[in-house]
Length: 195
Image (cartoon, rainbow, N blue to C red; front, side):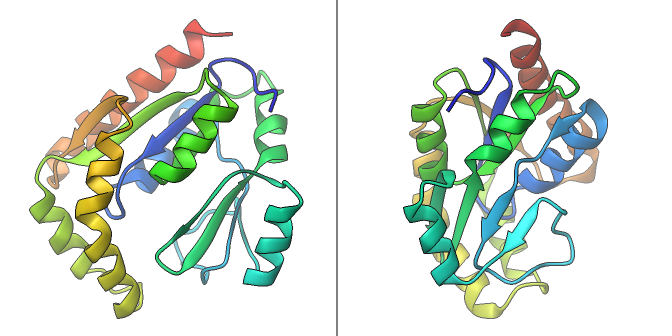
């Protein structure tokens, strides 16, 4: 993988903590770019145009051909980041960088392939609000919410074990801008100091 140094930012954390929302703000506010994510799950209304939906058989064929920079199976669905989309995005100087929304397993694969990537863990300041938020999601099937909730404790430990920069999120609208600015500061410093 020949990504430009300092252009790949990995945002890792549990479901429901706000990774996707904060990543979208980085894209909108600071010209970060999403790579193409291939998944076997159903489309959601808030998914971006960078998602591709495939069958499990197609995903496994792509994985076997080496198409993914990283991949993981989370709950019952596969997710993978197309390696070529990261290479293409980092080849351009028109973006602040590439932002990847990852699981700990996927993050470890990216760190191995691109040791200069920047990893930011986004964790809840109190797991209780995250449990409640996951239970209250109406956009996902009950089985998927239950599986994500059951994985939460172990997942939080896996994220902490990455030993990276950590931002703690509160489930309070008056803290969202502060959380975003903390994430953006780490991501932007990485983009401007490595080149």
